[in-house]
Image (tube, rainbow, N blue to C red):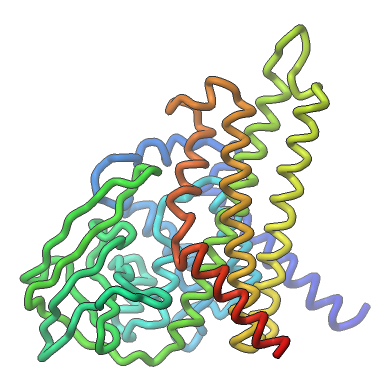
Length: 355
């Protein structure tokens, strides 16, 4: 047996262990009681669940060991997010993973230990809106669409001068939370001469954003798996005209079409993760990530909408769990770069490669 075979077997075992580690927060039986309990329950994150997430080492899974992380690859990261997406994990793991490499040492350690929750505010790809201005340690301006911004201890804010750390209880912070379709919230922040700590931009922000976008695509693959499995089970038990409706060939064809979309998305996410792990160029990374992100988002909307239709009238009620998958997919649709942005970036990257 070759050394490569040994390495591949070791990685497969590592991926299996990572997936198994998610079982405590994503029950294997698909129970979504915890997810339902947290919907529209205010602006807080379940801190006990978040501490469990941190105890697993998930926020630092991609972080270099020298920075306190596990130093694992994108293949491990997307495998974890895919498993968590199947159970609609509501905690802001992707956002925490985005800010972890950009924080100073003491703040990063507190985040990884679950002692503090620090989330990004305005850190994104091309931003046409004017960013807050940092002058003399004071921040002025606003940021919109901050994921779970009302639940954090501090924000890592993208400003015109770089990055700034702002405490939740700092003077001059105006916070307005707006509920989202999935029962969570986004926040609008206004800073009125708010004390802020300027931070050097040491890490590659675009690469961190690309990894967050790919993690989001992986989460959507898991979400599709969860919706598909529930729908398949429903078709096996729902009876009409004296037989299970899953035996009707027309519905079987629809399910096969959905399964193809899921597997295509999974393959594209895996290919992008492998490219990053292999040290792909910046242009190739952009192309692979944007391609996977668009495919995952479009497929997730198709699969979750079809899943509701295949459930019939009950699927349209809020009591039916299948609707939670569509709501979550709608919220994540334009997270970490809109579909229009990723489509345009894919074309630009492709043109550079063939030029």
